Structures are given as C-alpha cells and as structure tokens.
Amino acid sequence: MNHERIRFRILQDGTVEETVEGIQGSACEKVTEDLEQRLGDLNNRVHTADYYTQEIENVTLQHDQNQV
Image (tube, rainbow, N blue to C red; front, top):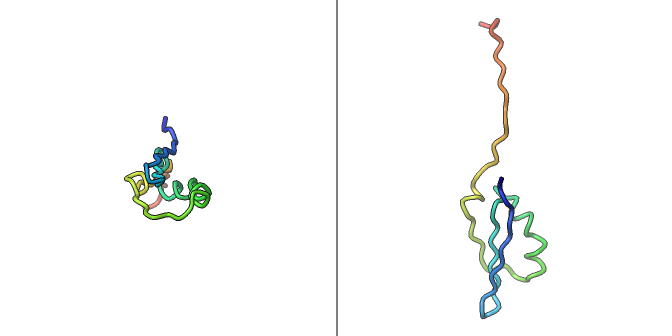
C-alpha cells in the first residue's frame, strides 16, 4: 500500500522545502497548489522520479479467434 505524504522542512532563513511522496505524475502539483499559494512565491521546483512515473491501468485485451 502506497502512503501519500507531504513533508515540510523550514530552514533557518525561513525558506520552506516541500516534498511530496507517494503521488505519481503531475497530481502532486495539483495537491500542493493551494499550499504553495498560501506559502508565497515559489523559488524552485525539483521533480522526483514519482513525477515521471505513470499510473498503470489494468486493461483486458480480447482476441477474436474467428478473424483471419
């Protein structure tokens, strides 16, 4: 089971580092959009491997054996 988590690290100069875990693709940006607006200006964004991972859907393929 994958846990979704947002971690914040507040540095001595007041800079806030935000790390999103367990959310794949661009959904992480949608989840944090409200928070980022409230925190202020975004200085930098670094995408993790989860950002580039696509969620896989189960697909059932059927083959008609009567077709040539």
